[in-house]
Length: 169
Image (cartoon, rainbow, N blue to C red; front, side):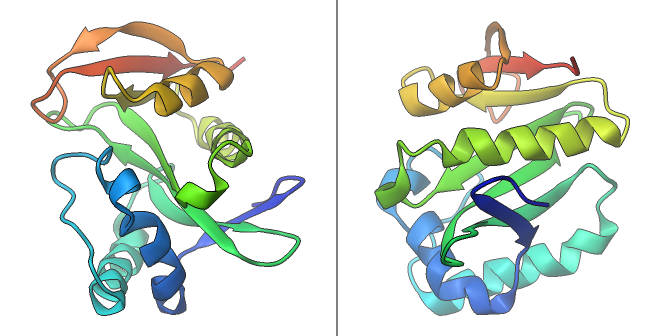
């Protein structure tokens, strides 16, 4: 899948070093879900990618995990996922994470628009994004995507989160 500036593709083991710049960055890991375990080196990141790649075929679309690369130079700038939210695994969650040095360039919004458009074509009726109340960047992306704020809850991940919802159209 692609946009004007980005290519959204499956993860590869060879992405480990560049993926570490995303998921190993403290300023990114700080905002990830509590179940996320810190990734401190390329071997650990390769293990995470291996798990993501191996689990991919078992996920029911639109669930999945993808790498985001720039079309102009092939640089990996981040990752996206669509997954079922805990605890009941009934609602789909959109997540994104970008390298800190590319924040503010619209990549999260652009990639998320593409993946949500694809997800809706898979037949889902809504998708959610959750963010800690002080995660202003994530909240801004959710709003740019046209997501509607539906409230605050402790239902997901056992922590207070802002909940945003997007429906087709």
